[in-house]
Image 1 (tube, rainbow, N blue to C red):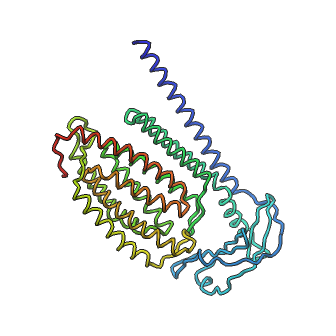
Image 2: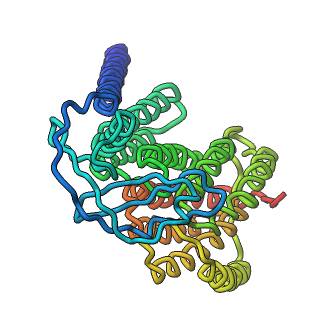
Image 3: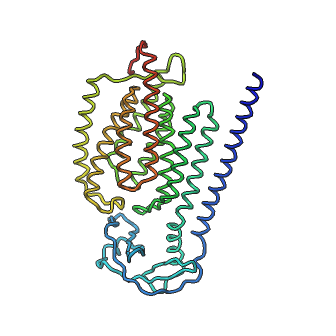
Length: 408
């Protein structure tokens, strides 16, 4: 017996040592990512060589400015070469031509910089060079951001190792490692004037807090709702930044945030009689499921029709109207299922896991057509944890069939 205890103690020490080593390596990777990225962005472009004039074509699809806009970025292309010109709104209104002559300069590292003048100022050179380097070093910044969030993930399971099972720890860390790899391999482009690095930061934070929330729900923990409030704020920010999924944004703002608070209160009233950390859960009846499905179909048609008729411009769909319409209907359906899901969670109903399946599939399709590959990792996390949670809740319901479970 003493030998078993000693062996188990030695094993725990070895695991903790490995965790500390991994944390140190991640901290180094994060420091390298941010350090090299900042050095490149704030570095000197060296001596510029003039390469000549290039005729460039204006990209009207990326423009959506009104009288409240202070700076209007107009993008011009010549093949894979790009020049961004900043205008005031008054100057932007006076633009008529769809073409412009760009003056190309080559840096000492071989990067092309474009200006509307053949004799740019030092400030103009520095501004354009920083923009070019930000796009070029985006994988480094993503590595730094992803490593920091991965450190948060490991610290979480390390500090609360007694609360999570081995499977739950492995699942959580695996999803975050995969998100880290994808964020570096598929950096996000800037959209609607927001740098792709900021967009990727929002994606990774959304992934971290979402899968933590999902894991806590599967464990029947009422504390998932505290994490969920952070999730809702992040998802509203993503919708605002990308100018898309307005049905989801409105649903999140006016439904999910209030229901999270109410659900926390309701779950607190229904603790398991034996395990205080658990919440007693239940399931729906057949006729109730039919009524909910009918309501979801009606919501999808009505809201999808309304959203598809809105004249909203965003960089995110390449001005593809058919794609925007399809996403509007999928978004409407996802928001409807989301509302049903929120009510299922509030009433502690097992059917919320079925709603998660539908939401994960719909949102996964949206992520594919919009190229949001990091968020696909989150949907993979949804699908795997949904199966886990459904099985755990079903087992609990079977074991507590004799116990009378009320909704309120």
